[in-house]
Amino acid sequence: MAKNVLLVDDSSTMRKIVSRSLRQAGLDFGDIYEAGDGLEALDVLEKEAVDIVLSDINMPNMNGIEFLREKSGRDGIKDIPVFMISTETGDDIIGEAKSLGAVGALKKPFTPDKVNEVLGPFM
Amino acid sequence: MGDFSDIIPKVVDATVEIFTGMVMMEINQEGEPLTELGIIKDSITGMVGLAGTHKGMLAVHFPNDLALAITTSFLGMDVEEINEDVQDAVGEIANMLGGNVKTLLTDKGYDIQLSLPSTISGEEYTFLADNDLQQIVIPFTAPAGNFFVELELEA
Image 1 (cartoon, each protein chain N blue to C red):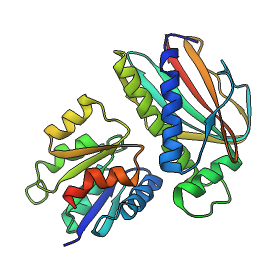
Image 2 (image 1 turned 30 degrees about the vertical axis):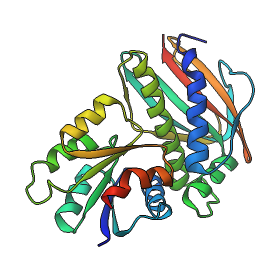
Image 3 (image 1 turned 120 degrees about the vertical axis):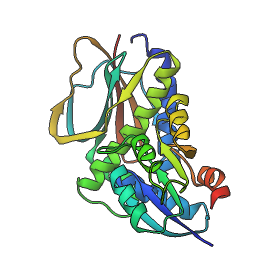
């Protein structure tokens, strides 16, 4: 069954690029939802049937780490897997993200092949 | 050139990777690095601030025609004027490059945080570094024009 995806990034350009890369990677996905920060993402997760989240880290209002922390405390949505998509892929920040439940990370810039390699097993 | 000159080749590699991998545009680094850019005309600049153990800034300066071509390629749709899409695309390029610079500096033992990206644009403006910042400007060529990557960092 195709997975519904939530893209979380304050850059609308980047959300379009990630969406395009998912198509180019040949991954089987259903609906694509978008959010501009962690707060909006939590709102979407509470309302829509999202199967997987792809989230930036460096965002206004609520960043990706704060989003993971808040999400981990909400029973209905805490088990939805989250991938971090960010320019920041240092061991410290990704280690913190994984300790809060992130299942993987994709470094910007990325190619459709890389998207397939990282996300394919989860789609 | 400052004590961060050793990361410049990697900044060049990161810039080329961003353009070939995500903008889908072939670029080349051509010419010697500069210490300042002077007056910038009919351009848009994307930048991210660096804070932490060393303050500084990463900026990319694009002439308008090139910024439009980049955004058109990025989004897969025609863009004919400097608008929010162009600002967003240019800011995101600065953000990606800033993330790479942060990683390179972290490997050198620096502890750096990035600001959110921002852009400025206009018919004519100058970009001046604080006196206590070292500054290097790297020239690149692209099919729709030349552009510059600028790194300023506290010594």
